[in-house]
Image 1 (cartoon, helix red, strand yellow):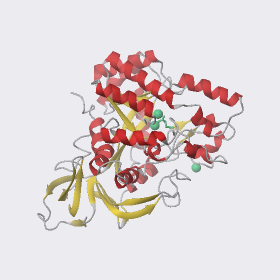
Image 2 (spheres, protein in one colour):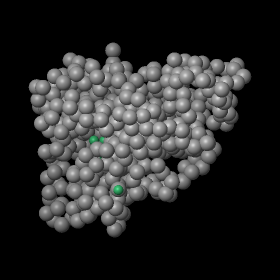
Image 3 (cartoon, rainbow, N blue to C red):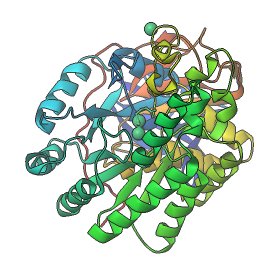
Image 4 (cartoon, helix red, strand yellow):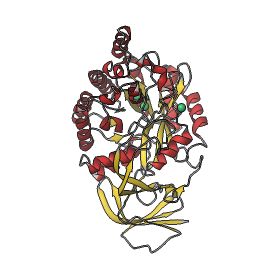
Length: 461
Ligand code: URP
Ligand code: ZN
Ligand code: ZN
Ligand code: ZN
C-alpha cells in the first residue's frame, strides 16, 4: 500500500521546502522534488499546506492517580485527542507508588496502555521511592526502553525526594546514561505557605498561585542544576514556567552544562488572571507550577527562540471541573493539579508562528524533532526522511478554528482555551502510514498505537 502526499511544503527545523512524500507501508519511502512520482494507491493533495513530522508530546498523564482521583483521559481517549491535534507520539509517566518496585510500576502502566492507544507511546518513570533496589532498577527500566526518570522537589510526603535522594539518582543516571527529569519547585517552603494561607482562611484557587511564587521555582531549578553539576548528570527541567528558572537554565547552558528544559502552552498563553477567575472558575487553571503573571510569557517565547527552552510538551493532566476540581472547593490545596491540553499543542504553537514569536522551523523543532532526539526516538520519529515512520501531519495554515469543550476530543468537561480563535488547523494525520485523521473522519482504533522502547538521550555523546 503506497500513499503520496504531493504539492505541500515539507517542514523541518531548517524551515520549509516544496517536496512530495511517498509512503510505503508504515515508513516513508522517499522525499522528492515536486512531481517526481505521479500517483500512488492513496494521494493527498497538500497544495498550500505544510507537511510536517507528527507531533511528539513528551509529557502527558493519562489515567494518572492524584489526590484520590484519576486524570480523566484514558489512554484511548487521550491518544485519540492527541491524534486529532496532530500529535502522533506521546510519552506518558508511569508513577511509582512508595514501597513498590519500578518493574511492577512499569507492568501496571503497560496494562493500562497496551492495546488501548491509537497512536504510538512510550513511558518515563516517576521515581518517588529512592532506595538501593529502585536505583538498581533504573538500569532495568533503561533496558526495557524507559530511559528517563522524573523526580520531584515538590509535593512532600507524596512524590518529593530530598536533595540526597536526588543526588543518588543523578549519580545512577550518570552511570547508566539515563536522563533525570525534574519537577523543580521548593515543596518544603511551598507547603509552609499553603498551611499559612489555609490557617488565615485564604482558600480560593488563586491562592494556589500565591503560595507557589516563581522565586521558589527559580530556587529549585538552580538547586537541581547544582546537584546535576556535582554529579555530572545531565538534567531535563519539566514544565518550566518562570523567568527566574529560565535564567538559571540559560546560565547553566552558557557554562556548558548538559541542562535542557521544556515549557508548556499554558505558560505561554494563560496567566494567574485565569486562576483568579471568580466563582471557583479558577480551579480549571490549577496546575503546578502555577500559571504566572503575564510578564513571564515574553521570556518563555524568547527562550523558545534561543533554545534555552528546547521542547514544548503539554503536561496534559485533565480533571473534570464538575466532579473532580470540585474536591478543592473551600480548600485550594485539595484541587487536583493539572490542565488539559494534549489536543491543542500543535495549534497553539503554530499560533506562535502566526504571531511572529517563533519560526516555522522552531515550531517543528520544539514540538517534534527535539523531543524525538531528547528521548531517544530519532530517526524513527521526529523527521520526514526515508526510513522514518510515516507519522505525518498535513496542516492547513489558512484554516480557522475556535477552541471549545463543545468540540474537543479530550474526555474533560471544560477547555482551558475556551473561545480561543486560531489560524491553522490539522487537515490529515498519518500514524505509521495509516490515515488516523483525514477529511473523511477518524481512522484509527485502540491498539493501533504501539509501545516505543526508547534509546538514551541523543544530545549526549
Ligand atoms: O499540575 C500538574 N502539573 N500535574 C501533573 C503532575 C506534574 O507535576 O507534572
Ligand atoms: Zn511535575
Ligand atoms: Zn506532569
Ligand atoms: Zn468527569
